Length: 494
Image (tube, rainbow, N blue to C red; front, top):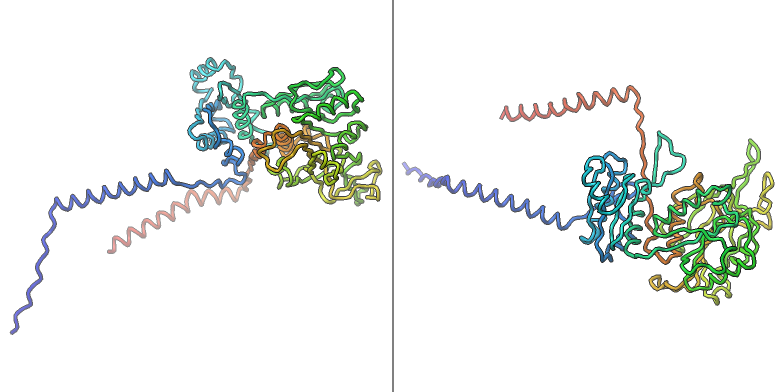
């Protein structure tokens, strides 16, 4: 009988010390790997803003400004945690802190809970906190932004479909820029011409201009041309809002003398119903001719003639003023006249004038001369599409925008209702703010637009509510219990 094959040698069992050492080594390596992954992900990561309005991302203009920031900025948020704006402000200030190169410090203080800290802030900064808001400190100066200045309410809001525009980035960036610049800009509102802002003693439009100036770091003062011998030397720009009466020869000479300066600026919101031949002649000499017509469209319907004077308008892509809103559309309420732009005339080029359109009416509109007719029809003397409703004029323009420091600038709009409280919309306010910043040679503030916030109410029927209850209260727990039971049964069988 052959000998039995030798049995294989048994391997010695590892000692308890070796097993413990392996376990400890594995735990240490696992912890080290987790710490390394977390460290790398903390230092190298990407962020995506998936909100429809991009509400958690700063604009490129603000990011570029923060990259060049060289002075410390302190932002103190004095808003209650129960405020509807708290989450938006928190996300916004986190972005400032993240992009501020450690120069921006952010502090949150709930004035309704942390009373001691709120009182300390009031004493240190000599302010009265009568409302919630954001306190910005930089360059030995401070500015308080009330909570109401952080939003623009859209017209037509109701309880079922509330919507508002959050303009916190615009307000905070403007405040930081103003504090770091240190100088205050001044616009003079031309009064005494029967403008819309003065009609019936109603100064709501003027107040809105002043509010816009407070947000954008400039001051709006009144000026009657008939009472002065020259435009004030500190004037950074003139505002003509819907003048009804024409300039006198003397006032026209004052305007022309001011416009001849290197850094002159003026905004004209024209009233189509006004007879202002001297003012129109001044604009015509600078490449923009008001036609005196009415932009409208008319059609015959089963209910009778239909004439629409509210103009659906788009923005061009040719100017830094309109680039932030170039994909938006807006409506000009009231009456609007079209503008003839003489951008290609050789005489304007010799004067160093560059004229660009800013607003264009929808193609179905035309400029009607017989606008009082019940059913106007586009005729031979009427302006055909495309119709320009706003234009910019720049004297001394150069191709490199960084060198545009000594150019004179005009903005002309064939409508005077852009700031009327009853018809004001966010797009028009954005356009006006961009125009004023462009006139001040502050292109870096152009492009910061409000973030639109929408709130929707979900309506459920009784059957839908019952179905939702059964799914969440019974079906979902039953599915999880069934999975757990099947796993237990399988392990039990093995």
